[in-house]
Length: 299
Image (tube, rainbow, N blue to C red):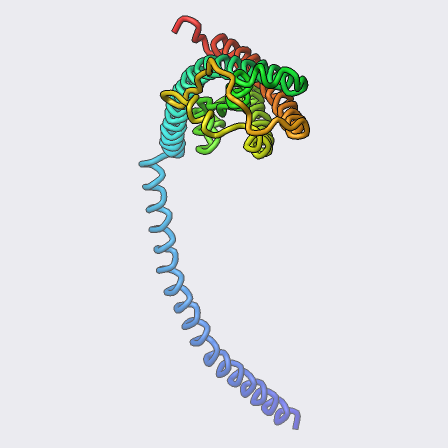
């Protein structure tokens, strides 16, 4: 019996070993296949990586970073120097234009000085004539004996020639925006200050014209137009008469009205004279300043 048990145990042990061997054989082929596939897929990848590393190493050997930096530096310097040259050229051109404008402005100021001198003399002469007219009109006893002088002065004294100065350079600077060429703000301010004085003269001229219109309305009732025509000469010149032609009427009320407007005109003329003298003084100062500032004294 014991012998039979031993035989059964050996037979059972043999069956177990056969089962283990059978399962081991099924597992080993799959493992070897997977290992083989993994090896095959790994080899090309490694070869590709080796090729890429070898390629990049070749580029860096031919062109190092110092060469890139040197090329960038040279390009930057070329652009920067070109910019400096263009800026300097533009600066020189603007300086030349500035001086040209100032030279032209100086010539305008010299012309203004001459025109203002003559204009002031003209207005002052008219003011003195108006003084005489007022004096005669305010003394009725003198009117008849001085009618010839009154005809001449009453026609001549109210006249006022508009002030015509040369401001072409200033208008060019203002309208073209080229005041920016004048680098110093104090210089441009002096120029602007000078030309800002002219509107007052224009305003007074307008007032003078309004007063003259009223003066003429009263004068037309007192003076004979035939006598006025006879006194006219060449180039609109008014000639004195050696006679004492009669007035249309000798009415004290009309004479006083004419005297009032003569007083108005006289006051306006004095205002124009004062404004003109102020402009002339400012122009002389500006002229002297620009000649020194831009070294134009000897040019």
